[in-house]
Length: 125
Image 1 (spheres, helix red, strand yellow):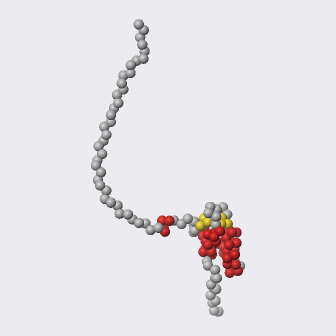
Image 2 (cartoon, one colour):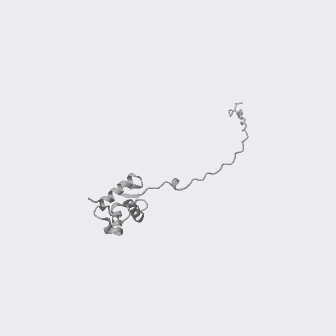
Image 3 (cartoon, one colour):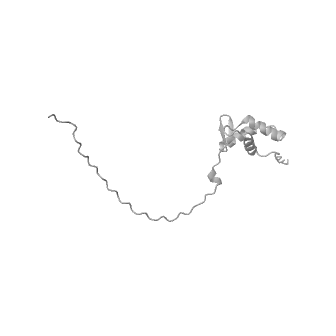
């Protein structure tokens, strides 16, 4: 028997399609629901998706949430916030030599003495 290779998909990977759908349909706080993602992908790719579309989509969503690339909030999905530290390159600043500070002299504590108050009582004459 000769092996027949799989036919290359006419659409991008499910991970890429899901991310694209969420970017297009997501609300900033709530994200995109599974039906909204399904509707977007069917409108864009149509028959190219094939029979096992819903199963593949469900598994892709599961995979992406497990990899923490998606965040699931109630019934919706949204893209996880990527760490900005990874994207930005750290620029090291050279520190200037610090001048040695003079030793601080301890302050003398001034004790306050209480003044004798004149008594308010008056004596009878």
